[in-house]
Length: 67
Image 1 (cartoon, rainbow, N blue to C red):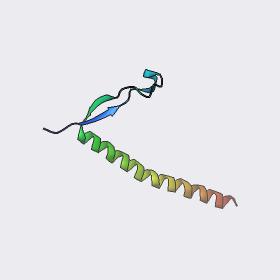
Image 2: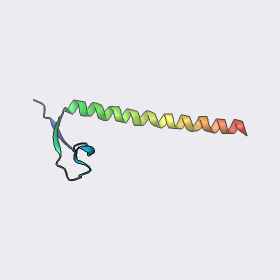
Image 3: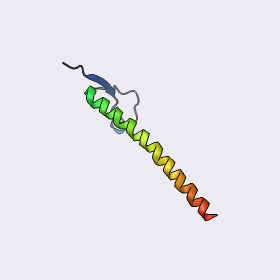
């Protein structure tokens, strides 16, 4: 049987009125779901880099043509 990954998550901030010493809650997380989430985040970061580069290039071209 696969081992479950246990994460400790704090309760939402408003539930304890900004008490940062509230006990954490144990949460069972499927390792495959955690790996999928990490892969999704890695892909998002990877392609966001190209999106930012494209925006900078477009803005530079707009500035160049306005001179």
